[in-house]
Image 1 (cartoon, rainbow, N blue to C red):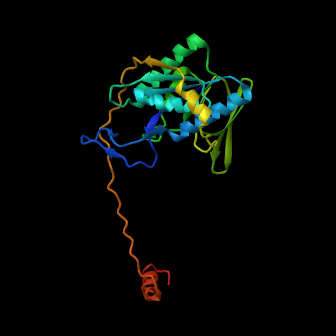
Image 2: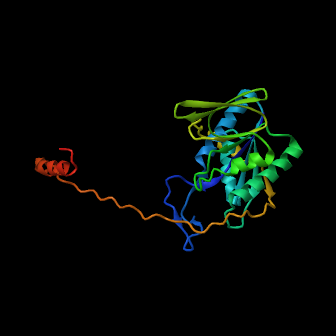
Image 3: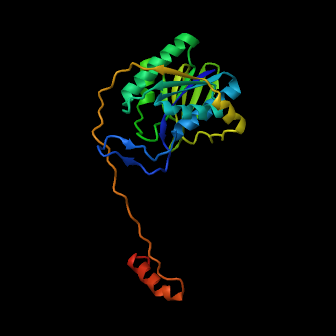
Length: 255
């Protein structure tokens, strides 16, 4: 199997996110970065599929040169080939431009090396959560696509994908080549081994430049909600606190 996984470099989950003074960008001065969690699961799923069926996993990212870090992480957990589509403009690309850059790159790679059986995306990125890029790529490449996937089985050229719904699962049968949007929880991503980390330092990363034009979407501003301050009041640390607790429960309508 030939599998392509598209990943995105995003601020580490749980980080405090600040915006720049012009409200147009995230202030990355004190942020750590990681692979978007849905996409981390997509890399793991691809690694498991080639362990079962043989083949290769190519991981592609569109981003700044620093995104090599995310590609090397993918190398440490089983990916075999790596492509960085550079975007060092300092301006975050909109979903249309990003999708066009991926389509251009995929078309070039497939012309050189052969078609990908599966292209995996995360269900949505952890920062913008746009749910757009994977579907745009699938439409441009004229390939069937399903998002929200929690299970993948492959047999010859047939792919069975399961999507979790309230009553159980929806099951989709697709012919390769196909595009799937993987959801966090499909698997438990492995931790890189020391051998994997050492090998990732030697991984060769193919760098390509995109000529994809900017899309019509325009960011107006980022809104940073006011922080909610929660105060904790200690009612006491002995039996003297009992009347205060009773009064509190009464105020809450529990009594």
